[in-house]
Image: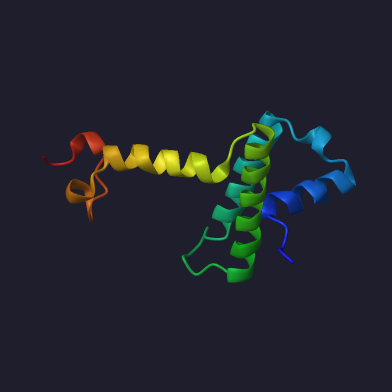
Length: 108
């Protein structure tokens, strides 16, 4: 028996609570930023954040990202792979390896 996918589990969880009514794209985008701030807060004073807190906050960020993609009828794998292809063309490995330079300032 296969386990349900993350998005299927999220759908069921939200449906049981009738929370979908609150999940407008705007609200979900706001929630992503709020939760990302809470994730960043884990590292506020040093790089040695509590792994349990990081795990929980990262889960919150990812949850809202999945829900936003679902609301906008976007395939998460597809949009990530499309973005990687675009970024790969801007940052060819032979020119960008080991550099944090912006793509328009990479050496030729």
